[in-house]
Image (tube, rainbow, N blue to C red; front, side, top):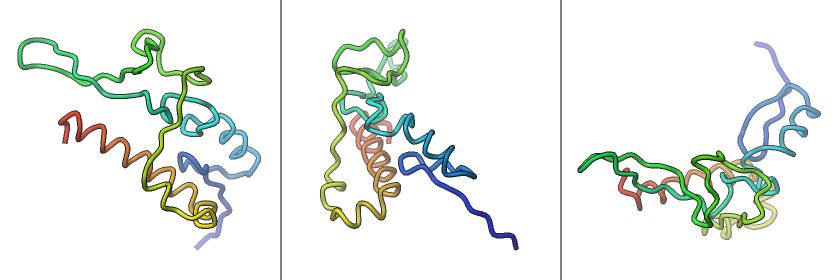
Length: 122
């Protein structure tokens, strides 16, 4: 068995071999709320796009009017509002510091599941 040192992004879980590269990634990570990206914004939702009667697909839509279909998902958006998840509010500050990556990932999964269930995908 070989022991290795690895560094995991607190926001997306991506793993790096040096702390320097991990810190550089975290500063721009798409799931980091400070980057103000669509992935961490409460305005991003899924909507049905009808292709023909009875046939549709789901598309990502910004409820504040950013045309992400043509412009793509955004970072550093001036309309960004961080998603708030009830599960995050129940975590104490010391637990939150120790489990920030886990709670960020869980918050993302919970909000994704909520959007999917509301849009009848699951």
